[in-house]
Length: 122
Image (cartoon, rainbow, N blue to C red; front, top):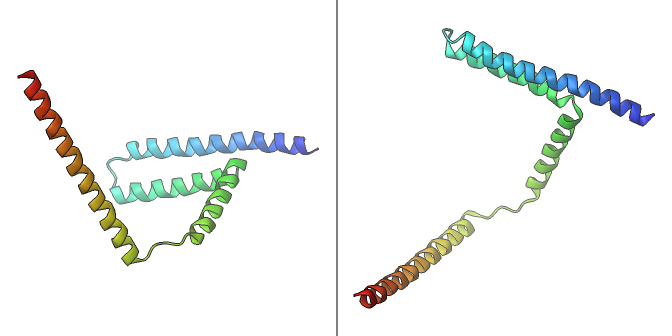
């Protein structure tokens, strides 16, 4: 019983995705066709077409799963402990100093090897 519902839903999902692609293609073609019109009108029309295409895409199984993923990601981002400004500055300074020290060491080693090779070659 459940597989019948899944197969009919997937069949309609294919139709919905086809509608999404047709809407996107219509937006691209319409933007080219109406290139003499004001840019504002074309952008507003493209945003409207994109919103309709997004709404149709969210009605599919993949679209619902994607929306759920976004909701879960938002919940997880809220759990992140972001560094304070002093912590951020301190960490940045440490990284910059470390990069400078390593670059000076590599420059010194490169110069030494260059001198040795040029002395060996003549």
